[in-house]
Image 1: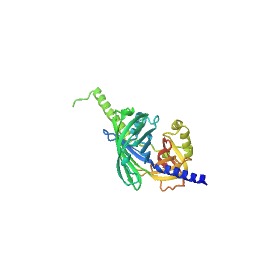
Image 2: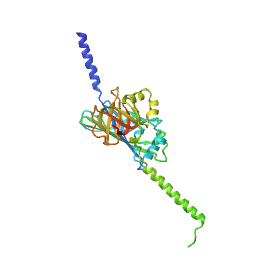
Image 3: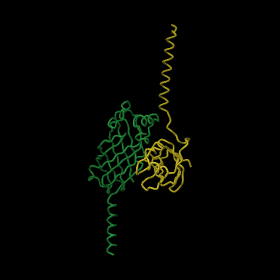
Length: 174
Length: 141
């Protein structure tokens, strides 16, 4: 009987531990990018997989071939010449919310956050820090963030088109 | 009026031809249509086959399926809309964490979980522990 009770108590702890961390996820978040120098250079990806945990961990993954341009020809050049998406199909970011104490995941509101982590793009991994917003609405978070990527930091030789792009993240989590 | 010399005429014609060629190339680039899978013959697979291929050997599956038209037949797991309003269907696999995430470019009408459909689209790749992604898709039946 004593053993039985210990088991129950042990199970309660396990359940509590699993409950302590909450993970919000989406498979269809959105990332846009555009060139500050050429308004035709812009694309959107609507299949961004992202997970946001209430311990501050945040990840984004997307497939380069999922970026859609207005011009089909530009999309081909982007994939074949600049990002080499057959060789490097995916881009990943894995990081943490630096000021986690400022975010209350169980209270509706808008929270300014700073996120620091590693971005892997075109086979190159770089540490980046970006500022964004986490908004909690009816218990569900959404994240938005804008930052700049310098092409040559990731060995992307696109200087004939643009030196850098503005990245705009918008993810609604479940 | 002074008559044009033959060499002057030749140069004029060449210049005009050059301008026309450059102009039509620019128009071609600008209006080149996006790829449409509707009339392409797709590789026929089940959701499970496709996931198994990526899970076993991602590099190999990339060479076989990336950028290819894939025709998936299976049971609809979930139906959602993406942030641009396009319909997204998830096909289940035997791993509860992993689905085949399929985005329609045209409106497939009303789809309900549990229904069996055939979807055809372009495979963009695999995100480990999450999904294989197919987009620009159409409903075959």
